[in-house]
Length: 303
Ligand code: C5P
Image (cartoon, rainbow, N blue to C red; front, side, top):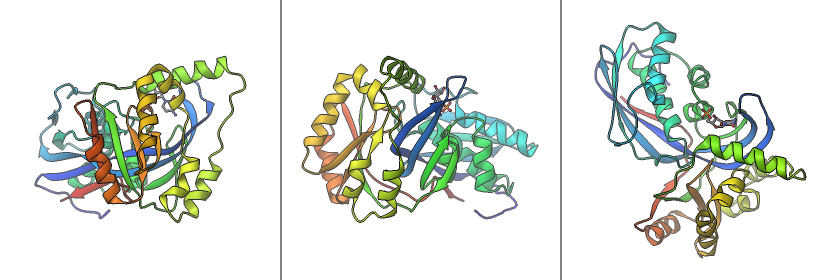
């Protein structure tokens, strides 16, 4: 990122969604948070945010049900950066929502990350990406990753990041239109299940990290795809378990995993053509699909 003296015109910023190639629960913190070991990956699906200099902070969005006040992480991110930088500048933020909500793709965090990186550029603050990620961690566990982007090992609450070898993977994303999962519910239900099953064990992340280091083809990752939150979510939503099973029967699909707390799934496929074929085949009145690619960054700024 370059240091600038600030920009007077509007800028467009893309906040990219993430998937979890691995999501392991390794412990519990207080206050309802868990210690995690995750492989997080940025993908090409993104919300487009327009940031226009203004006197105060305002937010609009093309999505009918998203709040446009301090309940929205993007709004809070602008307030936080204004406070931190003691700036008297404002901004009008407009969000074109493309990342589905309640999907486990970090759509809200991607918007907050885009605001942090975009406003740093617009206001000429000169903060580094790690400084912005640290600021974002005050608002949500996924925001630091959405700021830094790429392929990362994420531990702690998800905010302790370590870069991994970049992955170039074509993917199909698929989300049932009428199922949205609340993240706190998924974690809380996993906790109850763990208590009911004392034999439950942590799944080690190391084999996935080694597979990423030595990858030759997307198939190398398949045995190591893992998401602890599939247990509560698929138990509560048998229709999602059926969807996963059906996807696994598709000849183009190499492997399927729920992302984050769902309800979106991603599938690994051999190439972009397979991703496009799958997207066309699985699209229906009840299922949304996207052919996407992995990316090596979380936010894209167009000055
Ligand atoms: O940090 P964030 O607000 O995005 O987290 C949303 C919810 O996800 C938390 O309220 C908590 O229920 C759950 N969570 C968790 N452990 C984490 C991250 C999130 O239990 N490390």
